[in-house]
Structures are given as C-alpha cells and as structure tokens.
Length: 358
Image (cartoon, rainbow, N blue to C red; front, side):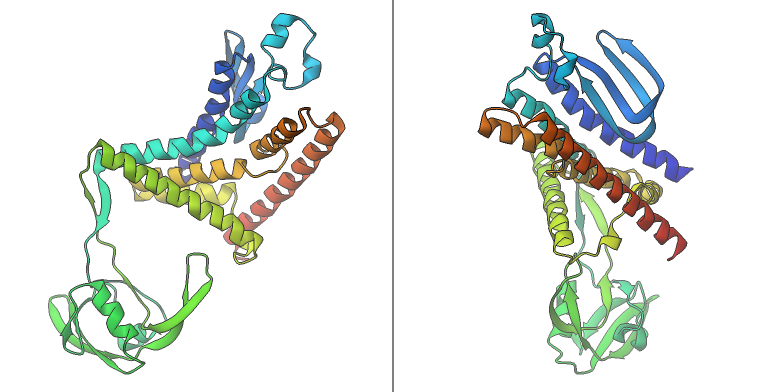
C-alpha cells in the first residue's frame, strides 16, 4: 500500500507540473484550453470551469492539455475562433507552449531542492574512517573487517580521514597492510593484502585500475543551515547535476555502455518511491526531483508524440516558413507511437523480469 500511495503522489505531482506548464503558456498566448487531464483514457471524474474541463482519467501514466485548434480541421473559420486557436499562433508562441511542459519539470526540481535546502540545510558529511560496507569475497572480508569498524591506523600511521585510507591502500603496491581498527571500544589488529581491481564510473565503465581492499566509507550525513542565496545556488547545482547525469545516461544507452535491461518502467518507479518514502520525506523529495528532471529531459527527445518531436516539427516550420505536410506529420506520429509502445512493453518486461528473478 505504501508503494502504491507514494507512486500515485510522486507521479501525480510531476504530471500536474508538466501539464501546468503547457496550460499556463497556452493561457498566456490566449489559446482556448478545452481539457486539462491527469491521466489518459476514460474520464473518472471531472468538472468544467469556464471554457476548460478539468478531469482525472483512468490510466495515471501521463496526462494532456487539449487546446482548441491543435487540429486545424477543428476551426470553422470565424475570426474569433482563429484568434483562440493553437494552430493560428506564431511559430515561436507554439514553440514556447510545447516547451513549457518539460521546462516546468526542470524548474520544479530547482524549486523542490530550494525548499528542502532552505528548510533543513545543505547536506554534508563528516570525514570519517568508519567502514560503511565490506564487499563480499574481497580482501577486507577475508581479513575479517566488518561494517562500523573504524580504521585508526595503517602500518602504524594514523588515518585521520578517509583519504588517508585510500592513499595507504593505493600506494601499497600489493604488499600486506597492518590495520589497527576500533570495534565495540576494543582495538584490534588485522592484516589485509590489497589486490588490483578495476575502477568503474557511475555507468559501470572501466576507467582504470588500482589497489583496493573492497571497503566503502560510511556516510555520516548531516545538514548545515543556509540562507536563501545558498539554498537557491545549491538547488540549481543539484538540478544541473541530475540533468548532466540524465543526458549522459541516454548517451551511454545509445553507446550500449549501459545495457537496455537496466531500463525501468512504472513498476520500478513505484518500488523505488515506496522505498524512499519509508526512508523519509527528504529521500522521497530527492527522488521526486530526480524523476522530474528525467521526465523533462525524456520529453525533449526528438521523438514524434513527445514534446521534443513537436519542437522538432516547429523548428523545421520556422526554417521552411511553412509547416510540414499533414501526411508527413501523421506518418511521423504513427512511427513515434509505435516506438513508444514498443518501449513501454520492453520496460514493463524488464520490471516483471526483476520481480520474477529471470
């Protein structure tokens, strides 16, 4: 139940933010908005206010804003209708209306992190030599090193910070090291022999090799109070980091560095959202910020049906000074729908395969 609630909350907020961007910019340019829907498919409930019907639809994996004149055939030719139609707005106005959805997702991430940092402070961690993880079948595991052990010295040289531990292991040249550790208020001596291992980046690429013993630093996280400027600067930096990682992730997928089996869909999102909610609201908020960036960047991909596809058509129209033919646009939309449909089936299969352990 926790997983379902967190999934609905996270996805509902992000869809609302995305569609709100389209809606507000359509209103800004005086385009008549016919429907504002959270979800696709049959209407669950709704209410008409003014000229717009606000509704919640059955399938919660998206949403849409239906504007008058998106299909030129809807316009009967009256001047008042043309003035309120999407199709009769300038290219740059239509471009901004389409762009506003993904842009709002990116701005929402900044706003979310700004509120977090202003409320609880900037995340920081104390430098420590406490062990947070011991990799199985590693030299450290074989030597008897355990989680929460604190490394006091290596070869009788005090280790005041984690960098001292890293340098001592790296410079060992594979020779046996004597570790003095603190465990349950008792000092113990352990002997460990480093081995050469591959260093991998966040995408699993091998970027070199060095001597390692198979331990990870414990994260003693705390928050430092900050002001409005500090919170805003950190929020922009956090969002930019997520944007960079997301873009690089797509590049690594295209280069087949990251296997496609790592792709996840709604089931994986629901599972992670549930886990983050159990870990606390800050964890859930950070996950929501990451997901908002992912949603924004994904929608900017130049695939017909997605916002990026519409932006591509509008860019071509701006260069040609006339829109692409209706036949070409229909064929492109059909190809985009087929591609997205195939992708959805694939990520659902990946999610099910993870659950079943295939």
